[in-house]
Image (cartoon, rainbow, N blue to C red; front, side, top):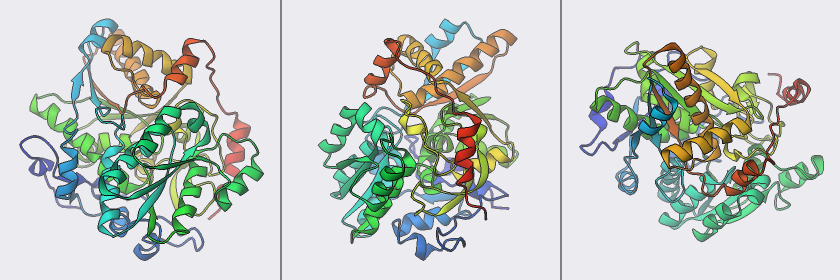
Length: 455
């Protein structure tokens, strides 16, 4: 078992972490290794470095180092917006009439409007250190694309973004922020890549998916000298960078002698949830404390609640490594919901392993219920949340009302991953009564499962 290292020694006086917490190092049963997409053998550092920056590939494969030092230049950048505030929702508690104490970690206090900048700046830094010209990526709702555009602008790197088509059309202003920071933004699937053309031929008129956009971004990187692909979620390296969320949250709670009972986060690929729970789960795994964790996902893309735990491709075009994860099948294209950042067919291998072992729970919620919670929260707490974040708000409210019914004084912590000011077309549809709930049938789910490779 790994040596016990207190995370507090890595915190400065201003509570900004000096090291990322690698949750895998605290797991006795590690996530299954990534497999090469052609050989189906565990992928090597050399092979992974052909797709990702070498240092990021090294972080991806590291499941034994408990803490990884954050380079000074990244920490200096973090100081622009970190530590991010942990806020007690006094007004929400009063309105609900609940004995529960509710806290939320707000990650929307930067131009990208989300937690995504925590990993974007790290990935851009390592690309610059390697001497690359630029990077390619995908984005769903646009938060990751915006964050990466900012980071690449900071380091003088070229940035090519493939944005899921339905989000490209639903969120034109998010697209323009990316272009403001110098990024080239293409709706996916597109005619600019072989994989994009193939997907369009197979699914005419498709609204796209994160799996499609990932495939295009990988192809674009591999066809350009001096470029690498970077990803905003799913990968273990991203969960590593996002651990600053959880480290700051736990430090703030400890400072005031508060212990969380329940920690809630929205879940698409798993980056924000993995980052939020990292130090708390590490304590749970070491037997130091007990917590409940709830992953909240859209009913239209129920990866954990209705998916299979199996090796599957991380992208629709099947050019990325295979990961053992909860999946709906790499060919599953979710309905064009307004929480674009949660429309991914799989879940990060780390959270998948923890969920499979019963160490965390999962819940799926309908789109209209999510926007009801978002509006309610905005009117009471004064922050307009992103649709993705509102999934966590929905369940946090539900759990607080259970505390009211049962007379329980629990402490609830949830991740408010970002703001919804670029999502006003979504709010407009909700207010005009034009928003509907879509739940895939068992037959649709089965079609996605049929594409999972039988290893």
